[in-house]
Length: 498
Ligand code: NDP
Image (cartoon, rainbow, N blue to C red; front, top):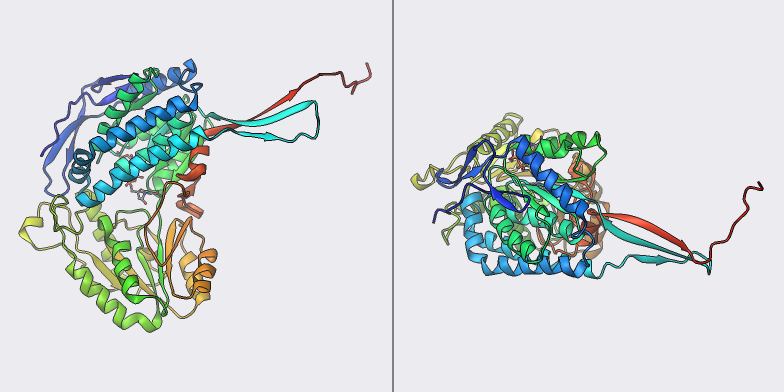
């Protein structure tokens, strides 16, 4: 089912439009390299128009100052619209990213839940009253929108990532310019079609939500644009640094969700069946293209031989294929270029002394040759001196390191520039809690891997980012706090005698 797409797919000031210079870019299915669609490629002039539209819509004030229930109504209606197109959206996400249909359906459901969560949260967000200690003065803190927000998202969870930003940004009363990855823009375009219909119905100004498409140049133009007040960026560490630098000139607010090098720690007393099963899911779900992927397995030394042998056996059995096929367990990487990077990481690790236990090459099945597949790979004998332990691979590559005791594993797990997520497996409750509290990570799972809920904050310590998405903090990212003090019966103080 190739998606039909109108090349007029930039949304600027309430109108769907092609790029002003007519440029387009092909979007490719990573399973078979076929062209799915051609989409508009915004120029710097298109990007500037989108930002100016968002600026006028914000400054006009009717969206920012509308009752929060009005904005919440738009989010709820968009959530309903997403659910009514659940299957079409899930198929589109699978075609564009290569992930399995089951994962794509979960993404649509999670995106819906996040829209509903922020619709509910913003309507109960009344600020707070402060006790001034004076009967003639009232003091309160209220929350107001920041202004024009640029929302820049990566290719691995296109629909989910844009909703994590869009829902709180719009709920708070901001106007937005979104830029998805050039590699996987299709579900974001579909989402904005649904959203724009609801914004029009609600009488919102034309430039409330804008969408520009294109590569890094478009993202960079947004990050440095003087009329943008906030940049929320999810992507790689190097790009995150350049966004922060570009934002510095006009002191924009910056929220960064960057990568991770996430430890998955298995103690000898763990439920080993569950730990092994989740070690595979942690590392190989969506071919490892998950910021929180459990790509570093830290194994108690006593488990080494049996656990790694079984891990390698089961990694070899993972069924690769078309995400649309029921039997597929994981799909391809997103692009040929990204597969080359993953293969370079594997070659580098082997040259540095890692021992190959599974994978390490491309699959040989004829039906997989047109897709960007590597085999799920297990590398044993790894240590923190290796680049593969310190740098994010973002592919189906699981490294194995050994430890002897609690102190050692905490030190190993914390010894990277990242601090996004990780897990600890043990049946000793005290140990689980102790280790969780010592890990410098934004999320720690005890005896689980990957679950999240919209109510709980998501984000990283250290170089995994700044700020948080989801939860109440996810709304605060898009709000300014304002203190309003009112003296009821003003009287001269005569501080100065004259
Ligand atoms: P990139 O950093 O390459 O790109 C992210 C987004 O930024 C894309 O839209 C990209 O455009 C855009 N971009 C590229 N260059 C610039 C620039 N100079 N200024 C502004 N924007 C720019 O990341 P990937 O798309 O490769 O995504 C993978 C990365 O994202 C991984 O490192 C992963 O860990 C991280 N990630 C983090 C998550 C988290 O929650 N912490 C969640 C998901 C992913 P384009 O793609 O069109 O070039």
